[in-house]
Length: 146
Image 1 (cartoon, rainbow, N blue to C red):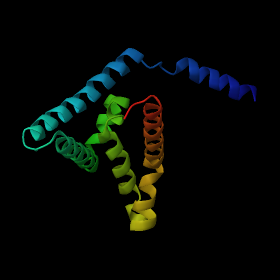
Image 2: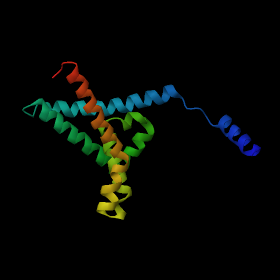
Image 3: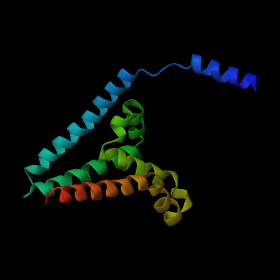
């Protein structure tokens, strides 16, 4: 067992440490670029939709579509490698998670493959999003908000 511990210690010594500042900067640039594209899309729809709510819905649909298309083309994986959480946090990252899981399991059939497996990764996001929204609404209501 001593040899295994020595080996692990050697691996830890020789493994290069990640540059946190560089990773944060890349995440900032990639995430910021995705958000900038989203803002341009929103501005475009805002001048063409009667209400701001419709422009928001159209923007979300377009950003999800962008995420799906970039995942299907294999581009979003490279974007994720470059930007890390900067590519994962926006709604395009959620679309990427759903689409890549669906693509991975499409051979197992539509229901038990694609439809079931794509929620393995995205399901917790949906559950905790609903939970966070409910708790936030409850706190706002208790604080006298609308």
